[in-house]
Amino acid sequence: MKVSIKAPAKINLSLDVLRKRNDGYHEVKMIMTMVDLADRIDLTSCDSGKITVDVSEGFVPNDERNFAYQAAALLKKKYKVSAGVHIYITKRIPVAAGLAGGSSDAAATLKGLNQLWELGLTLDQLAELGAEIGSDVSFCVYGGTALATGRGEIIESIPSPPPLWVILAKPPIGVSTKEIYGNVKLHRAKHADIEAMLTALENQDTDGIFAHLHNTLEDVTLELYPEVKHLKDQMKRFGADAVLMSGSGPTVFGLVKTESRVNRIYNGLRGFCEEVHAVRLIRTSNTCPKPDESDIL
Ligand code: ATP
Image (tube, rainbow, N blue to C red; front, side, top):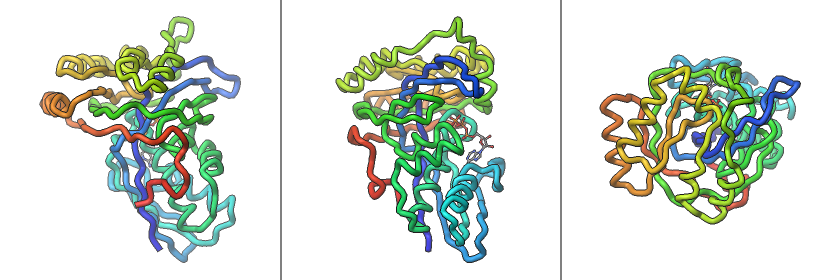
């Protein structure tokens, strides 16, 4: 038996860091949405009872450090599953890029194995398990567009933005999420107006969305990695309507209203940046997708 499932990347339309908690995590408030750049996860059951992983990118771990492996191990242990699974990950999402590629692989593995192993779990149950692997996994289980609070694992589904193009560009550096959070100076950080972004989404107000894009981590990453600032400036210069860094970076995304302009920006950036993608936002209704509407291929 085999199940194949898409694991899409996310971008942050808004990211605010509120405070450092006693457990070491940061309390955050984020608005996240999925884009149609996705890894592909192929899950094949095997009788050995073992979990094995292969990845198309050599530098992504293919052992228990892989988040997809951790997702399978968690389900197997918790629900006493005797079967094993081989996980093949075709990576398309840039790695260590602020696009939650690893978290999305874990979420897709949870959803795919729920089907392959006939566990009958709800999205809420899968999201709760996902939070044990990483803070972004719960959002990736639900998909769509959401307000994430707590350490990022408390998810409330909200309306998706209007149809827009998204240009993603990653400079040739990897950024550690831990390093960026470790360098946030909360007393002088600029905070996001999350309420204004929520209102803009509610009203499907594209210009309001552009005006309220904000990422509190951006100043930290830009100071450490000036190439990210350069990329932002270039994207604006080529004509993106609004530009922001995603997550802890270094990927920069541009929102664009028209296809002709997206092509111009893509071609302009390709001249000096190797990892550039022109994609669409994934739009859903303003409720969480049901398990049977998930991304099973
Ligand atoms: P986030 O936006 O959630 O902070 P990210 O996009 O910055 O994440 P990832 O691509 O998820 O970063 O990779 C972070 C690290 O996780 C990588 O350095 C990699 O070694 C490890 N990793 C484990 N499993 C995976 C996976 N399935 N895909 C990519 N990276 C993985």
